[in-house]
Length: 323
Ligand code: UFG
Image (tube, rainbow, N blue to C red):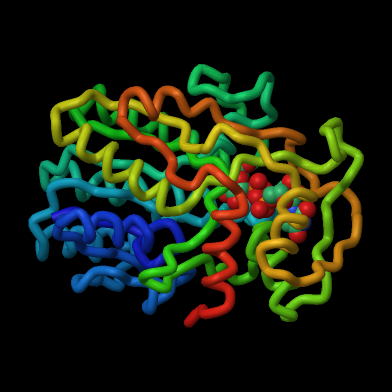
């Protein structure tokens, strides 16, 4: 049985779907503080909170957990600056509770949802896994702390982990009708599509004076189903006896904010009103992945390599969303 924490969230629900489709027995643990009951893709669901070590232990008592895929976390960069306490608790302390329950139950395999935000301002691009990790926001710092904790738990207790550093998760699985639904929504693609759907008047572009070809920030948008496949492959690598490791997950291609807006206009056939506003603090100008290591070691390859295909799946979700 695979325990998926945060399995009612955006990426966790897609990963639960991937694992279920591949034939794994899974149980989702989620406190539904950010996740959605309708997003749960498994028959087994525990509405439990990692903040409560006894509730967490109970899940391990109830199910024969062999490995964990750990998504449960707070994930807003902006909020992490004004409420760091929440981030250190929800991300770091709660992960320690999870790890404690794992060690007590002799569960020694975990795939961890990390982020390219652990790298901070890029010293070079594309960013490979050797790039120094100097996070510039609390969110990134908490994820890096967890990577460090995992390393120490490997040395001390033989816990084997895969830390997956995502670039910009995007898109949706249209067959299962699950997708991105944050409250508040802060991510570019869903906001642009809300403008296309007439739910929002315009999209604010946070700065067009960056040192990039069109002046707007460049990001690497990776489809959530491609992220999910990588989690399955990483876990299977652990099952085959591999040592702990860490991987970037991105397409390796950079797309600008203006390009996302223009392509969304084409995909939806709608006019998308935009306004240039000030830069958002903490946004690096260019972030995109060197994904060779994941390709080579995990045999992973993203299926969605074109941003218009990714946006199409997000648009389909926006038009049919249930939550
Ligand atoms: N942007 C706008 N207007 C908006 C929203 C975003 O111009 O209304 C721009 C941002 O400035 C940025 C780009 O669109 O240049 C993408 O922004 P997102 O907020 O969608 O994503 P981020 O790149 O800021 O954040 C993502 C993940 C984080 C992760 C981070 C790592 O959502 O969890 O990548 O850098 F930490």
